[in-house]
Figure 1: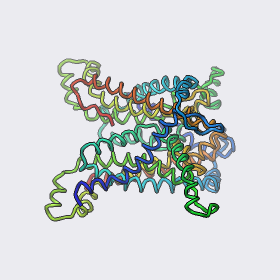
Figure 2: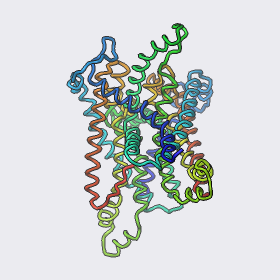
Figure 3: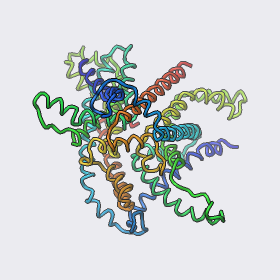
Figure 4: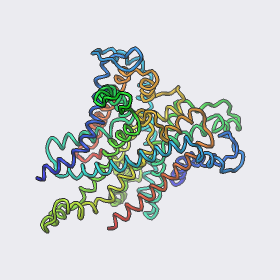
Length: 270
Length: 283
């Protein structure tokens, strides 16, 4: 049994180790190790396409995670006190958002937004008067952030609601008895207690948005995110540079994961 | 402001986002699936069932998905269960959390990067070269259903281990001792006590993996090399290459319907398996 577990761990980590190993390859060919070198890390960090893609991914992930954790937390708190058909419809939508494959979300968003934009752009031009300088709506960072926020917000609602469910109802009542306003109760009682869940939701949303390929592939328009860059590079052939980027991305995810764990542990103790 | 009004205000922004970015787009897919392809791609309004009648043209993609998704789920389950059992039941509590985290960490790193690592391992200079050096020549692994299955198991194993671990970890050890004290052999204890009590975890793991696999694109794209493709790959082709939105919408809508049907049947089966136990863990 122990041996079996060991084999599974090797299976899980060998591919990651291979990528890390080949990122230090001195030779240009991906699968032929010719000595140790860190030159590909330098190349990757000096490649303007990689840096642009990284910047886009970081901006999109940060805005997505911020919006998703705020909107998701507000909704989770609001849903606590809501009953009846509105609650049932909202729950169903969250369930659908999480269950529908990312690829379907991607194509649905693409065709809906492109169609709506095609209708709206002439209107905007008319309203603007000056047709040449009128703003045009198109697929890009905005649509990508909106699509990512919709999905990750559903995740945040699920996580925060689980935490709210474990809280004592009497805490809020006690706070109200002591003449706290609803906002005061939220800020001084509820929020500190659900903070670890909100933060976990933020980090989860960030990681999801940063790693997502399939939704971005459809709705990012002419923008290139890091996963899109990596995917199109692999299509042209695996290079040590891609391995170096991959190793750095995995390392960054690992650090983020450890930070999240530490914060959650701390939250459990208080 | 009343309590009720406040609650409505709190859910309004997220409700609006769900309407605009989920309900509206999905309605477009539904409406477009009855339309026609424009002369230069895109969509022309119409009401026709032509797109659905044409579905058999993409039969291979549906067939591959409907064979490899359940197969991959089953394979992941068979590999994950013994590991989850070892971790939850047989491991020193001191090490439990660390070993579990080690299983889950890969899941939180990019599936794109992890999948392409297998291009190395299964490609010409990987395992086939090793086999060649011991005299087994001309083994082809990459761009086969085998490669895609390995990629699936690798990608989704952590997602399968976790819920099974949680179910087994909650298990009351005294039940296993009682079973042993009453003369049951270890195998009987496992089959009659441990296994039935872990069914909710198994059900959750299988459902999570199966749902994600139904919409899979990356693993077949990277490891199937255009020879083993899923519905997801057909959708990328229809929307981004041939720009046939009406037909693509019909394919996407059919995929959703197939998913809903299989998941519903599956949940009914699990519920029946669990007669008397209402608390089937779904999420």
